Image (cartoon, rainbow, N blue to C red; front, side, top):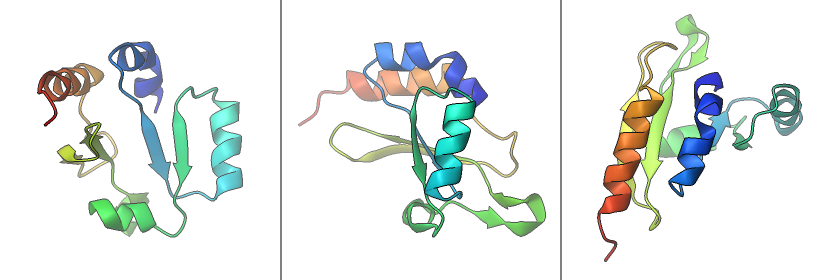
Length: 109
């Protein structure tokens, strides 16, 4: 999440919203977001409802949910998914911004 915070202004400048989904309950999630001054939306998912919708992997040997990045266009269509195999397996902000630019460049029908 620190990576996303670093370039959050670049995401918002591109009319892109960042939403982070995590396994904590609402209170723990809100406390963490406040403590870390995270500027984006945090969605608590303690029952793994969102996790199941998007096929995010849980690996108990690696301490829980594996990272996943999902880009959804303004029509609500999933346009890109990256499922990480370890916590450090995530695309760079530059990659995500470029993908977002590609998605936003395609006219919506």
